[in-house]
Length: 626
Image (cartoon, rainbow, N blue to C red; front, side, top):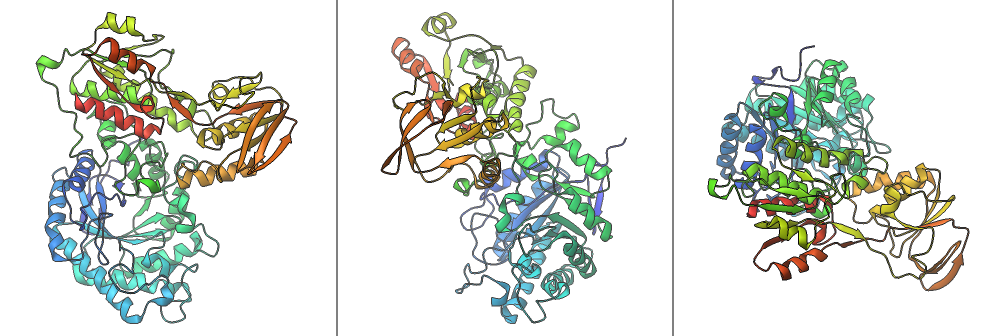
């Protein structure tokens, strides 16, 4: 069967070389005043170089400019867009601007939250603003535009019965709620010409009570095509259903493609499928089955901008697959400049470069202790530079804690963190020596010029009387396959490891009761994954005791404090402790004392236990620093 994904497609007067779209994301790579600087430019250039056919970058047509997305609200921004368009065109790709407004109230002096608060003058001004922004795009050499009509931004709100309670010409029936969007489409076509391509992005199903369903979206899509839209991009969700917009690993791949298919049957223009499409084979299947004409694969290309080049034989390395962790690209704490667990160079393309080492330094002897994510990343990046590090791993398998992280339900994708990096090392001829516990004698024997310690972490054991008793296990023990006896299990700790261990035990038919000292579970986990995980735990009947401290373990009983009130509860067959981790870095002090002239770099959990995202970035930094 011929691959459809690499065939061209035409939108308006623009032919795109393949069916793959890098869809718009707010990445916070712009300058503080909304200009396009080196960070944004190199991020886009790397995706174009990787082979994507169409790159869509958000641009603010009005509102206060900022780093979230490049601005196009003034003529002064046109040169930056021109420079970006030229960079994209250099690699045969096309650039569209997604007309993505800043918050309505930003820079306007008054707050506008719901469609009912928009005056007719404001609506007219907004329509003109979208058209003017599209005109600037055309002047800048941007090949087309996309209207962001999904996810409850101002355009989306007008189309949604959940938000729009107007009773005039812009509210009520489906036709009236779609009028604002139609007016924008027509205004852009009038300003730029009928052949200038325009994609309309819309949520197929808003996944909120009282929101728009796919059946009504079909009606809206027909009206948008009637107004002049050249393609419909079928997304999903609203802020109240945020977890579906950039769905994590908890949701099946390609879950929204069927809604794209429903729209495709109803309209006579190309349809774009999106949401958790991260594998080219899956994308090809969507096209072959006629569910869509193009596929949007943004996070897949955050993780691996060379995805298409690899598929076409232009790069011999394995694919660095998006795992759907959502830690870097969607996590609220990383809302300024997104990042990626799989790709430490995301957003750092202009500064984190693995330059080839000079011939006289290629023989530098580098010893990496630990084949967890930090050590593996350092080894891969050093190999990229031309070094030949050797990795020493005390177990018989690479991956460290990632191997345990991949065991709980919905976590299998984590395995690709290890398989990708081990695959790179095999391709580059880098040795991993398994079952090698590194001590001072071995270091003395190896005589490395550089020692990288990626020795990871171990479970933190709280000083609770009885914690070392029989039938008391750590979360690590459980995930490694320890047989936990009995039915009723007390789980101490309410962090991510504890919750994932609870799910794992429930799958084995255990009754799990969690005891957590703070008021909340897995609080450090990103909101989308946390929501799905807590829903599963609740459905499975996991009992949760918050603001509760275990004073003593006396199986089958536990002495606890519920806030300040003592209590004894019984009936437990075993206890599992998952109360955090501590760095395993004892070797560092020994080496520095015994070999004071040796260059030593400590990375990952050996510095401070954290996320694989942090460990991998530290591995990349170490490799770039040598």
